[in-house]
Length: 193
Image (cartoon, rainbow, N blue to C red; front, side, top):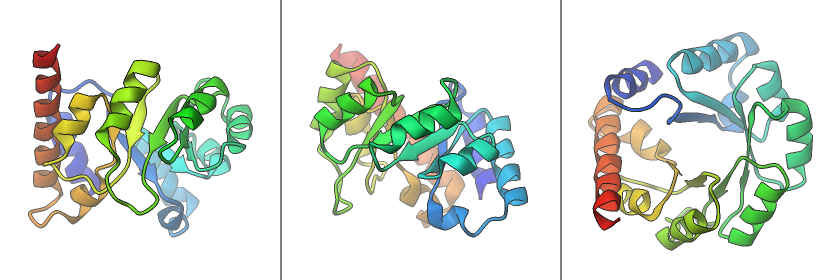
């Protein structure tokens, strides 16, 4: 599945390191260290970023690019373990102030999401992009129909996991659809400016 995703991404005219694979703890628990290291290295060899979610130690051991955390108090520990060269992000719910605090305390990016799994208001991405130069990830059940609005609003990263892996016509077509939707959103943003 990842090979199909990588093939489409690397066929498109996009800058490297603009795409991220984030490994959920439930998935990571199913994979032994040898296979996980192969996944991390394969992702990085394709010019993409590999993050672990809430597992700073494994991110360090596997030489992953970084970690996405749920708890503010874990930022310092992650920064101590991963150093300044690797990425530390924090999930902030819908709290923009928490995002600013996270960035001021060492986070490289923040993530906004709802507690019920619904889409977050795109205004949050727009507000964040005026307050900070740090990237923001918008999490939620994105489809290619919603992506242009969020890209246009200033979201740096979009969680398109469910759409990519569950699309009825396959991973390659889902990835093509998403890349096209992002391009439409970015084109709309350029026209507006």
